[in-house]
Image (tube, rainbow, N blue to C red):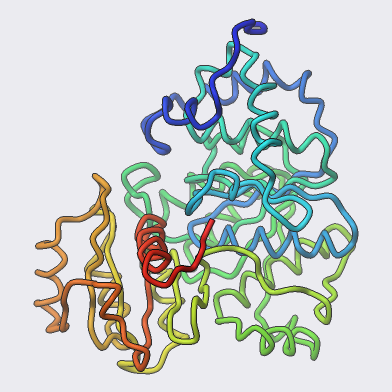
Length: 396
């Protein structure tokens, strides 16, 4: 249980040994590990805990960027990553250097109890090691909920982004079950983003009342849309869902007595969130119905070719039905991942809705067409790899 005297393996080697990121886990293990490490960590930073189904990454990055405008040292922990594990750890306007992460791993690995941790739990504790040198930790949950490893720490404020149906196999089948699982992780101060489903509000207020928590609801954009906000939105052509996430970030800064300087706020620095690769190619890691609904609002009718694939457990039919009004054609991109849906299941749905489809080939992309690459992180990752190979564009 105490310090391990052997030389630790390299971080990448150690992570590979952990297996799948969201493999079945002991819900009490992270708490046991944290209770052991707590005196050693001696965290002094303010903790902003981000929980939700959609929008955690961009909300968290906006919060980090806003705090940095006030010269605060901030660590933003997010997941998953597209290309490199370092993407999960953003500090001082950039990703953590690999050597810093390796150093944190060397320090963490010395405790025998940490060897029990899962892949995501280990990443969580690496973030806590790195956060000791920071004033703020923007701590993004994985699947979220009371047993998520990020929930072991006491937060200064719990920020709930949009909650919808996803990961039902773990969180519960209904929106009520999913909301209850997530809201049980709330601390004493809560900021709740705007929701599509009134049942989410009801459950949030019930659990806040049980816990004696203070809750503030994020208002509509018109409440925040002063001239500087509007100019920022126009400058970077922010889609509606990113505007909503920015409004949540405004409330978080307000909680800490700070404001955004929109005149000097830079473009959102987060890969795969409505990211414009070229004026005619947009990639987005949306992977559920709410993500599809949000992305649809940005496009005209029958205006895009959808480059798509999905994990089998997702509600593929509902996602494609949501995107149907904007799709000209679907190109199915091949992805090597055991969770990916068999091609025939996707084509069966496409044929049901009379959607034209074909195989994706990067070399056949046309400059006079608009493309939306939409799906899980592995889908966007595969597209960007192929794009790099053919266009000689370097990604991380």
